[in-house]
Image (tube, rainbow, N blue to C red):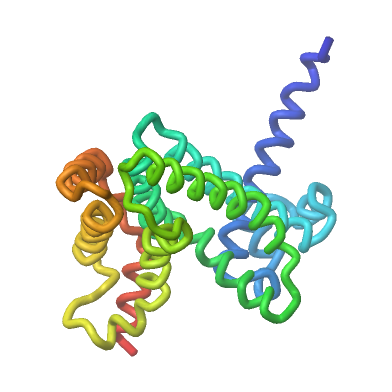
Length: 248
């Protein structure tokens, strides 16, 4: 039987470790592994710097733990959408919209991914295999199964499943990563809340017309998905990026 006198100490340790990880996630997403400072992490977590090494032993281990933390959250959130009780077509539209909203709301993960892609190209990334194992491989399997099911039932058009996945998700990545270029070409601010709201609607409506065998049904499903999926609040970071570019 567990000793109840140990519970307060255990709870405090768990809470302290959680605060450290959340502070580390913010620091690493902003500055990457190399640029992050353990002093800032400790200050943000409200702990002595020595506790970082007590719990995680090294800065590299802390980084991997922070990546694993956000990866688990992203995977679980995305899988919940893909496992929803709905037809394959509806699940696909919801997954595409959730992907858009996740990029918008989970900027820490997006920033870590950019840092890791650059490190991977240099042969320095130790976290990329973790990201593939934790997030991308299980989601890829789920997308493929959903698309194949939709084609077999006749709800979705018969096409290359990978191309359909790229059409559903790739446009989101391209839009956000290319924001500085769009900003030079478009007569409006691409990261303004109203622009993002229009883009997420266009995404779902387009897929409803492009991948459903019956376009009228695709339009109905798209309207239903948009109707019960409010846009998440735009973080200040997006607006800060906008103002920075406007001053440049």
